[in-house]
Length: 70
Image 1 (spheres, one colour):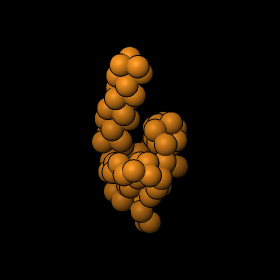
Image 2: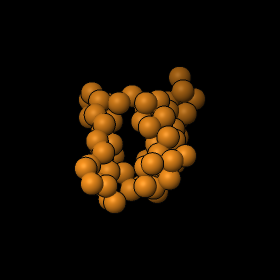
Image 3: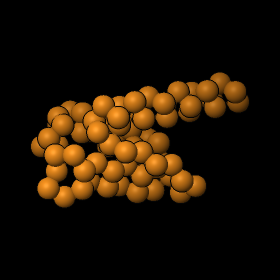
Image 4: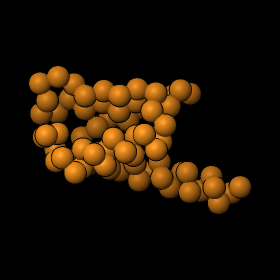
């Protein structure tokens, strides 16, 4: 159980590090993660109530598309 918790904590830390590099703010609530990005966008990008896996997937997509998002 401790290994699973450690893995989860490591994944969350890595997700937060990537979010910072991609200029996303990350908030964690009891319902999940909220990712918000306003830099260099005409309209803010905001996704709410994401699981850790969903947040990772969203950030990986942005990473592949580049900071401009397109």
